[in-house]
Length: 542
Image (cartoon, rainbow, N blue to C red; front, side, top):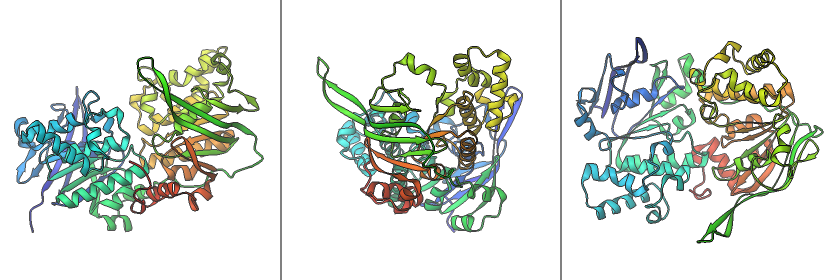
């Protein structure tokens, strides 16, 4: 047998802070052969990314240390190499694609400069040759008209285009090993399918090995040859992908495989009172050019949409990034200027001023996608949740507010004693529960949920979905649920609106939209969400 390209042998990773030592990884071993894909799967905190970062010595040394282990690449122990030697490996022999391209790409540099920098560093080509190579790479990763994108900055690209640029950077020097750390988690299902197909095609063409880090088992099933399941810093199960999925042995593996959102939404009641509705809603952003900034056109983010949300029911809004989902949600909450009729509990509110809307804010709440970004790191949880009570319940005393906060925490499954701790002391799922408690503490009637599960592990997603269903039944809440994760929408929504480029392309009962989609666009979304291989090419633009 030929020796593996990469061997991780008995790897352990400790993090030291003052006198405290955290054992993040313990005795991890696995091999990767040329042209093979090995997946490291597990929930947040399992040690997947720490293991991957150890391969390129990207951990924060000296706080991080390796009490045991070797990482052998082409016969050399990378852990024993100094910084000068490891730099020759990084970006040349082994490269990495990270989860969130917007934070990995430099916002001040163009696409050409960022990709070209890697080529210059390792190959020393002339400016002309570098530009030709960059254009070729952008072509390989499927960027249309790459010459026009050379001077683009990251914020001028879509999420899928940014991830393609990251892949182009990673492949610039034709590496032997690509480490892909959650490369599709932040992407729409259709873009995710495109990126995975692209990685498979490039891998076959270059005979490249791939170490895939993910918590999404649907992806693992499609692209990996072998799987290592990690929990609490250890590999608890390993084997061929089909064997792991068909006959999991470890309880944790079975837990992961059973973690998809399940269940049915509360049954639809056509006689339930309408909490919020909008007719012919439009949000157009002007495009201005020239010295006098004349309006030459409009970006039609929301273009003539009707929506009706009843008490105790959920309307799901799905579509790719840029389709207008979030803009629609912000418009019905009167957080964006819009045209069209908006009615809340029988009152036309589309003409309300900021001051006149304020009393209604307690009844119309929002839960955001990223709980870490939406919770102030400088405030204790009790203050975060109770802040709305100070504004909308001015006559409520301190003790009464604390009691209401404790009640909200209990409702979302958290211990009331947590109110004196800070957001960084909680897991991602717990932080999202805190964000939901902040909305619930004001006892709202309408809740807009903007991608509330997309940043969470699969098992935590399932918990949050169960929690939202339970809260809806208990309080007769009306939800506007915005997401690109169709499995979550299927478990929550009574009705579904499919959006594309600001317009509704399909609208109807959830069962009808999911089981018998009428438009090609909806069919492409369903194929990408429920069977990645089946996504029809060319239906969805890059």
